Image (cartoon, rainbow, N blue to C red):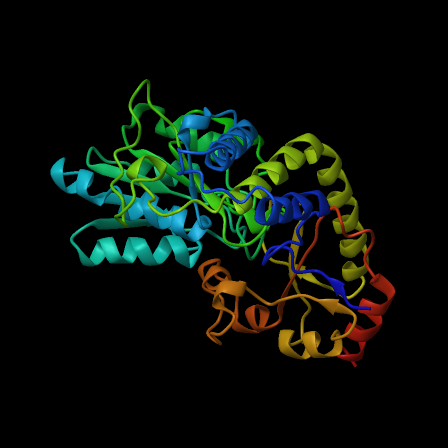
Length: 375
């Protein structure tokens, strides 16, 4: 039986979450916008409960949580939604990195095409930014700093707390793409200096198609975002459309379970990662990135091609050699390229990612198959 080791692409839905989603689909299926009967009233209560469950993960107020279809939409609202404010206030400078997810890089490229000035923080082969570089780039007209928390390909954890310290004296809005950390490695996200946080349900054992954008208030003022879609006025007019109550309920429960079990799940993930590294060390593996999440390992074995490795591991382990969102593209990983890794190392890179549902790794089978490629 093939073991699933691609949790960074998507996670399985926990049974209690799936049961709740099913119940909301077939029994309590009201529209939360229907105010004339009890089905709508109950649906609204469910949505507000979930809003609170999501907010609690990062110690936010539930009024600061906007439900979206996932982190991609949340990223787009956070970045493109602040465009008009930037234009009106002559703040058209944005700081980001070259290792962001495409859902951040492409909206920012769109702003660049519309007259915004973009500064990119460089990373070394560590995959982690130098905070002092950020300090040098901040200007009076800096509108937005957008830096992901945990990289989806390498698992590198950016120094969010240090970044918040640097930004204390700046009015720039700070956006964090937390798709890979929300509900799993959320401690740094509690920092009140983070204005905007993007989260995705299917990375934390909830269904696909649901996520959130947390918009923290500064005092009593919320971030000055404008909607990208119009019609209906749901989610305070920022994200119109009928709310998928069943998905929201599932996301809320997944967040509650994640918050409750975070330490235990992290400990289990660390143990799995250590066991894998111990075996890969014997093959001379190179590890791509430093300060990485316990839930993922990106590595290259000298002389081994990743495509060939995935072929020999078929039927044993389901893994990847990059982001699922760009898997139709055969261009080299923009993340690993930005880290300055050589072509052979990039072409040989593999990503294994797991969760608490991964009881153990089939290390003997994996290493036996990979060793065939070393002959």
